[in-house]
Structures are given as C-alpha cells and as structure tokens.
Image 1 (cartoon, rainbow, N blue to C red):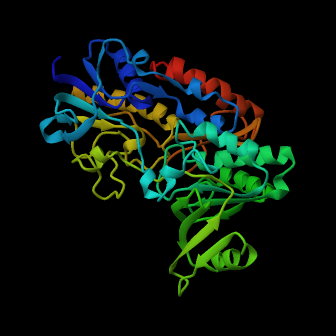
Image 2: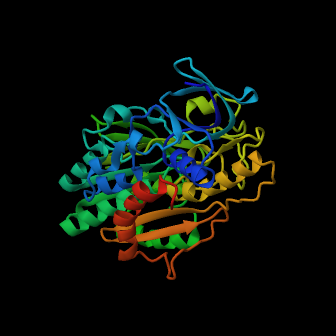
Length: 423
C-alpha cells in the first residue's frame, strides 16, 4: 500500500464520509484515503430517543466498511501526530502517511475523567449518559422505573456535540413522569455550565415555558466536578450568588449541602443528593489535535484553527477541517456538518485548481429539541444567533411534524443520503 495520497481525510464519521463522497461526485478521478480505526459507525443523534424508550439502540450502529465510499482507500489506523509543515501524518502503529491535501474531521473527545467518578458510575445506581452507546438504554430503564425523588440532569461548561442533548432527555423524562402521574413527587434539577437554556432568544422563550411547566429548577454557570454513584451525590462548583445562597441553603435544605464562599465573587462547591442522574461529560478536541501544530493556540480546548467561513486552516492552506473538531464558533451538530461539507469540497477543489476560494459557511446549525413525546421544536440558526427557519411556519412552536422529522426522516436520510453525499 502506498503511503502517499492526493487527499487524506482524517476521520470516517459523518464529516469524513460525506466529504469523501461529495468530492468523488464532483471529480471521480481524485485519489482519496480515509484514516479511521473504527469498525463500527454510529448514528448518535438517535441516542436521546434510545434513552427515551422509543428507538432501538441496535438500529444506530452499522459496519464502517459498508459506508466507505468506493474508489477510496480505508486506512484502519489511529492518528498519533500531525506534521503539516512536512505534509505528513504519523499513526499510533508507527506508519507514516504523506499527502498533497488534508481534511481533518475526527470528531470530538469525550473527557469522562474530567468529572471524578462519572465513568465508574455509568450504567448502575441510577446514573447514565446518552453520550455512551452502552449507557443510553439504561437511561430509559432509569426513567421508566423512577418512582419519584430528586432527578438531576447535567450539562458541562465546554462546547459539546449536540448541545441540546443534555436537556432534551430531561424534557422527555418530565413528560413521561407527568403522564405516569408522579411528576408532583419529582424534584427536577438542571445543572448547567451555560448561562442560559438556549442561546437564540426566539427558541429560548419556548424552552423557558417548558422549564416552568415541568417545575424544573435550573442552576446556571454550575460546573459538575464529581459524581458518586454509590453515595448518590453530585458535586458542582458555582458562583456564590444570592440565588445560590437562597436556593441551596434555605428552600431545598434536604437536597443540598453547600460550602459557601466568603464573598459574592467566590466559587461555592455544592453537594446535591440525587435518586436519578443523567450526566454529560465535558468535551474537547482529540488529544492528537490538541498536541499538534494544527491547534488554535488561543483555544483552551485545542480545536483546529480554521477560517470560520472558508473552513481552510489559518496557517496551512492545503489543510481544511470541519465538524466537531474545529474552532468555528457554531453549534457542533450533524446539521452543521451538512452545510460545512459542500464548502470544504468547493474550496479544496479551488485550491487544487489554483482558484480563489468562493464558498462560504455562515455558521448554520440545527438542533431538534423534543419538548414532550410527539412534539419537537426544530431550532435553526447561524453565527449571528438569528433564526434561519427552513419551513414556512414558526419553528419556535413545537410540532408533531417536526417530531416525525427527527424520529423517522432524519435517520433514514443519514444512512441513505447524507453519508453517500447526495443530501
């Protein structure tokens, strides 16, 4: 096998496969290699539905080999190092691969160990995460068997793939418990590292009504640092505001203990007891990107440094990147990848043809958020956090039609069109 390739794609997920397919549709003579060690390919957007008991986990996984585009070379290796100044990649096995052009899209890294005890707690003692293939079905077991008590849903302070997933499952759980007639026995808390429930005002208003209807207590700017499955406790750090003092030390004394800081700007460490916990790990660029010349040195999470509109690397013009691994200030979703891929394809071909880069990505992303079983709000927006609605109706209103889009249409599109570069 030759170790030099015209186009080298790092990552065989949604981004890598769809870009490879689209490139070959545009120019069938291209010589493309895809580097990815994974045997399996996952449709992760359905894992929320798995956790809600309405999707079979086994329908979210297929063999990677069945989706590698024809006329490409699959290199089943894991990347260890990038040497972009030499147009070279080193693999964990020691294999060195050179290239003329490179597309970097290995996805995002789940930093389970950044929350002490989380990885060990998963899948037992009523602790789960829909971000884990093995744990997502356990989320449903927890929800359907819950008899009441304190339910905690966490969201980290870092950007994450599918930013709505931490609260999507909470809304579905609340709706299930309401229909089961036990909601008044449930004390529900959303512990979020973010400062708002959603960054786009039009959609935020809708979700705030859902929070109110479910009597969900929200803790913003709260960074989860530890989960003890055996003791059923979660620890998080938060600013010592008046809200924290009142809600933690007075109105919910049975649920919390708090080590209060000395002044309003200090950080308090809060311990909360729970009976059910759905946790989401902090996330960052894969270590082999963090430790490489491709990284954005100004970004603490190590993402690839690109022009947010052209998707070209800021310092290496024969390198492009897309998907969850970049420093583009957009939501990390499959919908974003779908809009980024044709921009990467057009601009890479322009570089190869020595033409100006003309394709532009505007930061489009979409987040389908179920607010209850059978109703979903399709949030679409761009870099300006302005709604970009596809359909001729108010998408800030949850609808049954959007539920069908999420549960039926999008999974079919993914396997049959998106990965093949035709959607």
